[in-house]
Image 1: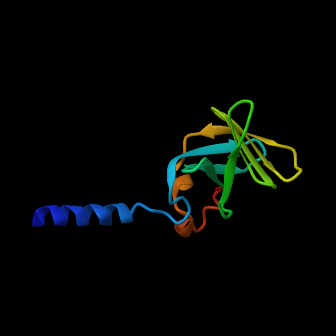
Image 2: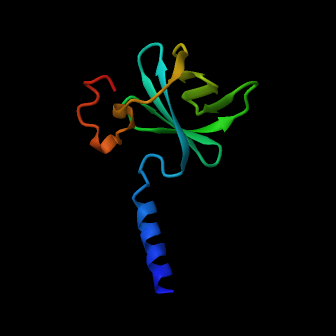
Length: 123
């Protein structure tokens, strides 16, 4: 019985170390390179929402809305519309950017709090 208690405690500690301030309930992440420069990290969250982080900016939470095709997430100012390997990113009234899903580099995966100098390196 005591061994079971230790196993449970170790498991809880291991899981506690896996959480992040920016995507606490993320089910999966995808990375996109947009045609006018920005890179997006998109975390699929529980509750039909996504968290979008543009370059090194603060992440945004967007709720899902109805779409004729693909998965569309939107607030009054931001729209992320995912259609498989391609997505559209729109901010305000600007022209939408076409973004292509890419394989993340190590720099893209570094948490914000330890990403010093990455903005100068292109992320």
